[in-house]
Amino acid sequence: MASKKKKITLVRLVSTASPYFYTTKKNPRMEGGYNGTGKLRLRKYDPVTRKHEWFEEKKIK
Image 1 (tube, rainbow, N blue to C red):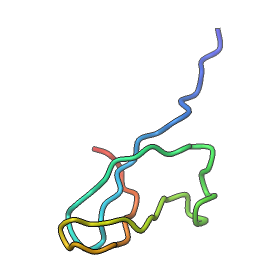
Image 2 (cartoon, rainbow, N blue to C red):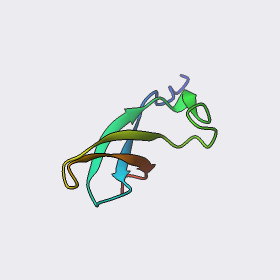
Image 3 (cartoon, rainbow, N blue to C red):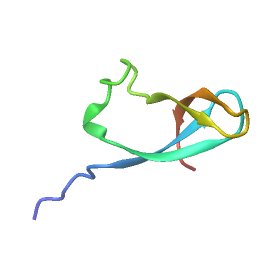
Image 4 (cartoon, rainbow, N blue to C red):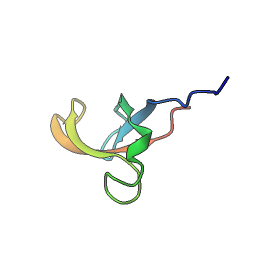
């Protein structure tokens, strides 16, 4: 029986301005499609700084 690939990976989005983070899901088929590096980078609200900041993808430990 053929094994199925995992379709969704969990990633951790860490703020560039504070230690706050979000966790979200990412489609692994979009590797390299977000910004050329394959890493997700979003601008989201950071409650520590009370502003919208850039959040970058890091590994979940």
